[in-house]
Image (cartoon, rainbow, N blue to C red; front, side, top):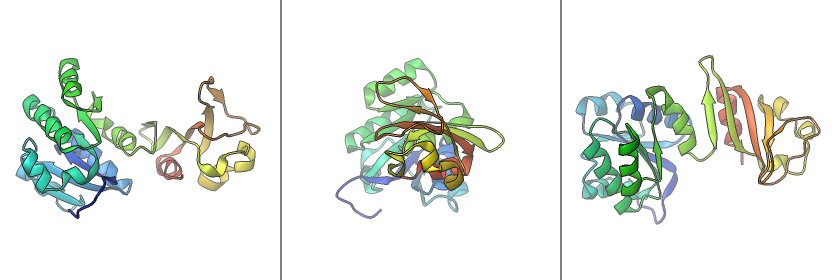
Length: 223
């Protein structure tokens, strides 16, 4: 990995490429992020070799190994190890000691989750295997929440892009521009409001938008 003086916010390291970690890694890749995948299982590493930006077979509980791989240069890490509690906890500890600023970790239950939090995980998730895509969206920081349905339709909560500030939804014409529908608007310290054409968007507003998954993803990436 190339050296950097500050964490790479656009890159994510995913440790543990099983069903959950693999789902997160694949979704992050589809969203356009550089992904470093790490797993001890040679077969899993081989299966991801042609899909991820980088994939390495390594012991993630060893901080020196992670440093040699440049993990400390990443802005975010996802620990998808679930079956081996000790490896999960030691990996989070190693990431914390390396100073990774945003650590997400999978937990199999409340006790596991509490241990991960005390070890240094910033976010603990209790996912089913099919939630990997949702977590990937949240990890990137582009969305506050995301739900995808089986038919390629999604609903997301995301920050209002700068181009909408000081305009009504009718003036912004987001549906014709981006193919998404604004369902509602949440303003800081105010109640949720259903979206109307005359709804004025202000700096700091959150938009609840719906539409085809790819269009919702593209809209959330707008700044």
